Amino acid sequence: MENIRFYTYPSCTSCRKTKKWLKGEGVPFNERHLFRETPTYEELINLLRLTTDGIDEILAKRSQEFKKLNINIEELSLSEAVDLLIEHPRLLRRPILTDGQKLVIGYNESALKNLVKKKSKKILSA
Image 1 (spheres, rainbow, N blue to C red):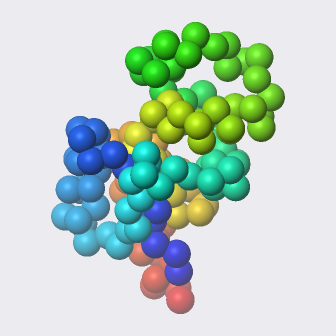
Image 2: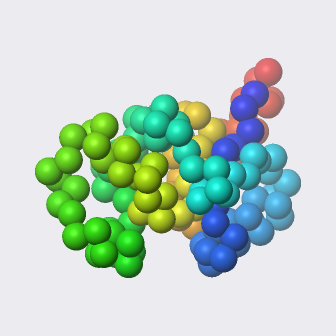
């Protein structure tokens, strides 16, 4: 069974709240610093496969970094957009959590509970 992959940035308030919640619930997770261990091209493609809104779901459009770049994300191909996220990981919303089947972006307690409930069902049925 794969643990939850938790892409985080330590000074991010939502990341700290999410980490505290995960630890409080005793949920195993693999933590990855978003800026030191930027997701690979393949990892980002897999994350995008789990979204319901595509790139808009993981892109931090209100971030200073996005505003500075002054780009229209709609004009980029998928591979160009993914390359941009790798080059500028601050464009990623955070935290990002996945178990490989589901995706949670930001601190969302009900979504986290759903992700954890799903994991515990797998444990019971194993």
